[in-house]
Image (cartoon, rainbow, N blue to C red):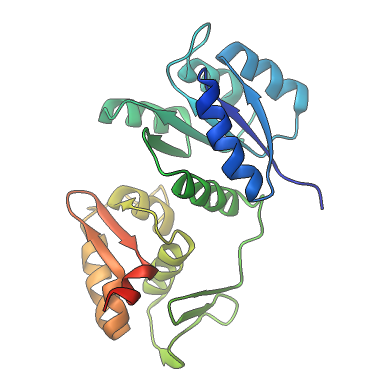
Length: 230
């Protein structure tokens, strides 16, 4: 099977090398571009790029313009990399069709995990039918969850929520991101509905409910390493 191609676009060579090294360890083929114009040319030359990691502030053509150019022709998954932490920037990115938004500095391991997750959602990487982490087993085909061998009865949304957490283990997820992924983008309710479902899910999971950690002011993170801290 051919390796999936990921294009890394950043005017800092050191940053490109760091990201490339971690992605290549996960068996991705990495293409590099040092500015926006080069990125657009390379994208249309290669044709079969599976995902783009794109910096915002670059010479010749910034990341936003790159997104605008590519989105006219392609829905390829795009993850924005930026030193900015401005909410307006993040909203702009999502409005333009960006799939993820990661602020620098970031953990390369978390970056790779987000690349994996976005590619699973896009269908470029086959979604796992059985998920296992920290004694939790999710059989997506049978729609069944067992914890330490004990079957747990979950509602449809609780099942989807737990699956999303485990697929994105170790990644801090905002309420809005969870809402968009589990309830889909056409849901216009209060993001606080997430809190209610998480509370019920934790209760049904018993001691394992502690693996779903609250990130105050943001959302939640499924942390399988928390099981080792007891």
